[in-house]
Image 1 (cartoon, helix red, strand yellow):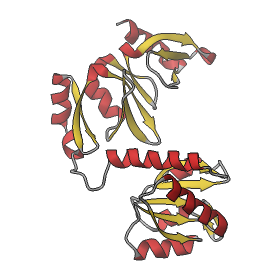
Image 2 (cartoon, one colour; image 1 turned 90 degrees about the vertical axis):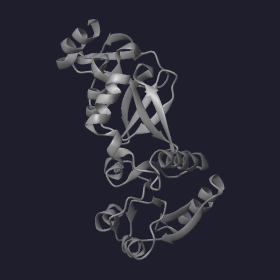
Image 3 (tube, helix red, strand yellow; image 1 turned 30 degrees about the vertical axis):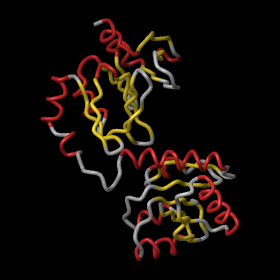
Image 4 (cartoon, helix red, strand yellow; image 1 turned 90 degrees about the horizontal axis):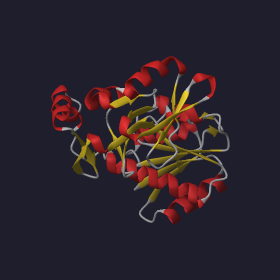
Length: 253
């Protein structure tokens, strides 16, 4: 795995390079660049790296300027001392956002997230997306009650009745089963709502929930509801007050 580091502080850049290699032995730091201008020159002239670690505030501007000027699908892990750039980071190929001072654990966790995403969406895998997102695919899986998941170079059938919820995590759709298996999939919640049918409810922009996963709905502030689910994990599924009547009608149906 080839990694590009964009960092203007020499000691921090070297510490980051050492920590990356400590936490992941099969890596090569292909280049350390200290500025927006040098990063643009490098990315235009060289083969794309597998992964970029980037500071945000550099001496000649913000690293977001790099990705506005160079078209790349390379994922980026942002390392910065400031937390106000998080939203913009995830709009610029960001898959993780680490606050300085970083630790071996925070770097290791970020590398593990990259590995999981790469296994799900490897550039070199067969592209099944056109097949899996077609109307024929949707109709077929409504009938047989399963979804096909492209995972680690395998195609895995997952029964719809075994899926507890779908959620948006870092702008990607994640499927979570009742036994807490998790898969990133290349479908929107809108598509999945059509595929999975009336047994699932679109709670909000982040969650599509199976009725069987709901243990109870609790009163929340401002006349909202919050759902208690039967699966592990911190899933705060909130129903807005405007949707409460519709939700309750669906729940009792």
